[in-house]
Length: 312
Image (cartoon, rainbow, N blue to C red):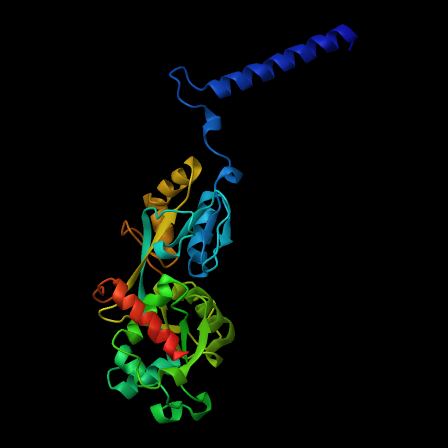
């Protein structure tokens, strides 16, 4: 091709590229945004979530095309992130946003041991009183295998997170049950870490725990082969924990609004968090919660914290 023909072709191609860019950026004739208005996946805020919500957030991130970072108790989130957490656990820089999902507090036990304790209590069900009857006893005394040793309970530190405080209230709202201190063998900073450790090490660490339902559901698949399976029981009445979405800036606000849409609320439900919309199906193995307990007032919160400190 001669030099002048090559130059002419280059000019034509360049002009076509410029024209296409102008048309895309301009959008339709009525001023509606063009195709570039949809943000790229990498342009979305990341989700910052506690361990208990990492499965929920992982599924949401997969649907949205973004990523997840872990939010540690009393930790900070990356600038521009959307945080999913209990309102009381949000970083100081953020204000609570809308509730995305709720989770009741549950009693969780390894199935084999739950059957033994339930039979010992004469009901087959594990409520707060039945659970407390196992404190400071051996499994041989309860009716189980002598090789199981003493009854072991797991709890998260109620001074660190709202979920842990709610779980502690199930046991200690009316005073610390006798023998609890001797049976409390597994402690964690939050209930997500607590259930993760139970799943990783099986029934060698804890026979039972009190935690949010969503933290338990996150480990359903992981516990298979590590102690059988989890059985979930609902205190009646029992506390609930609300998880809000919070973030600053236009991108964060748009993502938060998206989390409340029906398709993502179904994703939330499938991962074990009860959605505010009521849409979607929960994982198999979860049941029907009891009557919601009244929210903790400041006097009860202070008394519960003091009881935990005395326990230590």
